[in-house]
Length: 251
Ligand code: PGA
Image 1 (cartoon, rainbow, N blue to C red):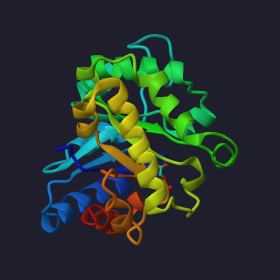
Image 2: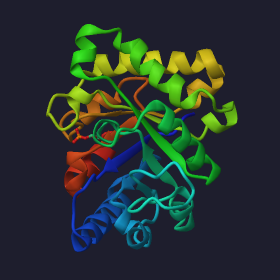
Image 3: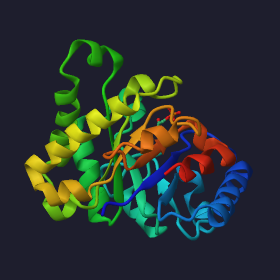
């Protein structure tokens, strides 16, 4: 059976002291309160990866929010997959819509990032999703399926087995608007069948597909109850320990 994974995406938030406090609160609350075998990942600012890795125990692990597509070199301000690997960090978010929008990440660049992540043993949490305009005017299901085709479908089935998908409709990110459980389920099922068409039913059945976009303690249980929704990628609500742990418990 595929894994259920709830990941927090802290984005560019928290000072060093706040980051340690939030991580240790979450680790303790999860240890005390969560009995399911859900996996929890905290995707934190890269500056804190090393420190927070020391606090991550039990079912909680730490992830990066981005890596550069090259292994090393003259790329001032960037961090590489080998650097993240050297800290024993298991996960990295790739292709978040904010990276696509503000930092010009294309499907081609993301294919390179996916490759270098996998070469270094990092598991990508690969984000995909449509804008409101695309949902209203285009075949948005085909469009999101194409994001997978373009950035991931060059992988072998074995490599694809390392990928976690996060479907995040852009219109739901940070807006308080959430996809309905049915809208999420429809897209997740369409993505799973797209994966099956390339890699077969077994690989597709084993792929974790998270939903992201204004997930909260109030709506998580309903979203997670859909058969093809295997957890969440949580932004705003991951910055408060109580809210985040309640979302984890909703699985
Ligand atoms: P949000 O962010 O939960 O604040 O909408 C989700 C994300 O961007 O990953």
